[in-house]
Length: 294
Image 1 (cartoon, rainbow, N blue to C red):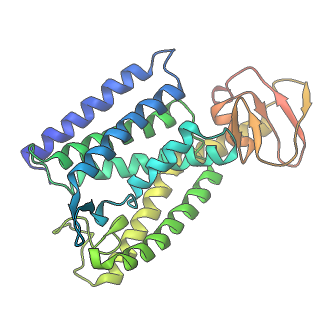
Image 2: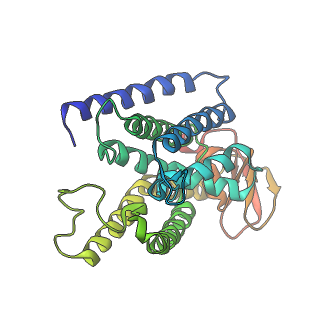
């Protein structure tokens, strides 16, 4: 970590993210464009990984190294990205976008800073690892920056549940595949030796507790600004009347506003800014101003 070669890779990843961020600003660059581009990177990444990680079979021929199965958190995002790209619009797709935006950002940055495949320039998997996680980080930030993700309190609760479900799932998967020494989500052992906080110096259960707490704290800190903003907007909604015109709307979530689905109508204010509701009522107030700048 943090050798000259590692810093070169970090610089390459940052440059890639900045270039893609520049192109994403163009008016004709849509969410679908971003999805197709990221899926193209995913395809290249998986093909590279499969070609590099094939090992001889005991019965002749070759098979994929079980350690390369897509059960790491960043690899699981491949399937979520596919659903975001090709799946039907609706509440489930919105939840996946919310999960992807947070976990992709944190996981992508962590993978770039902790190079589990090394930093050598003559190893195919090193290229695959850095470029995939650079693309993952960019796409996740794109979802946040252009307000495709809704990261309020409801999204925080949903993401926490999904992360714990994946933790339990990979506890079983690592046990089933223990003969292959798998370490999905790094819940068997640390990703690298010598890490100051994530190590086995105090035993396995302390390590597992630390990695869970790190995930919970990281998720909480990531969502915190969005939750605070959500509550601030809620207060402004209650205190502000911008139009006497009221519209009847559906009473129960999910709410469909401006082409997106929301578990809480307050969440929609942060991204759309066109419909408001005061809890306890079934009416919306139509506004034209951005509620964040009232």
